[in-house]
Image (tube, rainbow, N blue to C red; front, side, top):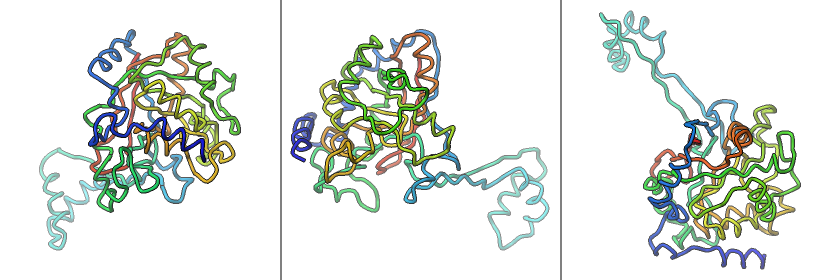
Length: 328
């Protein structure tokens, strides 16, 4: 625990951008950084980094988060039935109103809704998602997150940053020579990240979003096992991210960091979450689909791209879905 305290003190960015700051390391994304990101686009290739939001998603493995429930509220079969029955249905004003859209004209429509945890698939963790010792990032009180949402550090606060920046893929799968999946028990260390950077001939710059390919999502697509563990970042990578002044980090696995408590800090759960979100103010992206991006980067040897990944602007939310894209 002493090592954890030392690292926490070292990476803590409280007050760095003012006492009222709720953006954390997204402050590294300046107008010049956005322009730099746009300049990485050379061939116009658009690659989706988002997974499906559906009944077969990874969150079905966890009892406190369910997969999205998608429900049709109006469908093609309703039109003819409503025209026949709804006009005389005095006790159902909704049916009457809907039927008025369909009577004596060819207009038809479908409508739907979705019910889901905001972190059901590809998503960002807001800075209010994790805290300890009753403090959020920048020293805001943890009890400012109420049943009405996060007053401080909610996901809606990041809308001013996009999130758009230069993205850099670090391909752990290729570096380790794994077929598709980095198996658990071997966390990704800062030294290994340095080796991958050198191997790929890429530079990590201030304001970058680092995207880590472990192969977990590709494995999940083949097995459907959302609980299967895989390699993630060792908790000491928080210092590496801090030293490189990155804006955010995302991965294709379920926690970004390595989930094995044997490789963590005794007496804590997910210590890198604690360091990144609460101390550093660095957002984490989870469940990103990086297979196609990794293949494209391997093919052309270019591991930088313009990343566009704004979260859904849910007021007061502690995380939100995202459908990120990489443009090369």
